[in-house]
Length: 169
Image 1: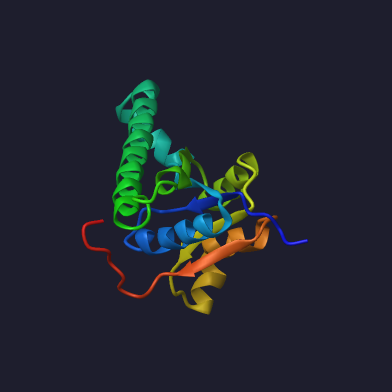
Image 2: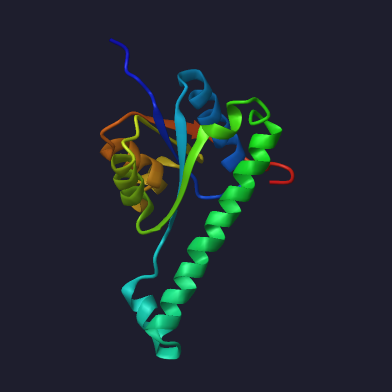
C-alpha cells in the first residue's frame, strides 16, 4: 500500500530561497490533497547571551521582546505565504486552503522541526538546503542534515540554487 501524505511540514528560515522551496511544498500538497503547516524556528539566545541582555533590561522586558519577535516572524511568513499563493496556486478554489497553519517557535531549529513534525502528525517534511562543503558539514553541523538523519518520516530536501533571489519576496 502506498503511503498517504495528508500533512506536510514546510520548515523555513525565511531566507531568499524560501519561495523556491515553498513551491515544492505547494506542488506536493496539491498532488496529494494535503495541507501544509509552515514552521519557522527562532534560534534562542544562549544562556550567557540572555544573562548579558538581562543586565540591561528586566526578564519581563526580555520576554516581551521575544514575544514581539515571534509575532513579527509570523506576520512576515503570513504575508510571504499570501503573496506567493496569489502568484502561484491560491487563485484556484482549493489553493487558499493548502496552508493549514503557521507556527513560529523558539528553539534549536533541527530539534524543533522534528518535534513539530510529530506534534502535527506530519507525513512529510520539506525544507531547503544550500550547498555546503563536506568539511563544513562535518565540523559545523547542518540543520537539514540533522533533520534528515533524525526524522522518523521522509524528508524532502530542496536544493536552493546558488545566488537564488526571488523578486519582491
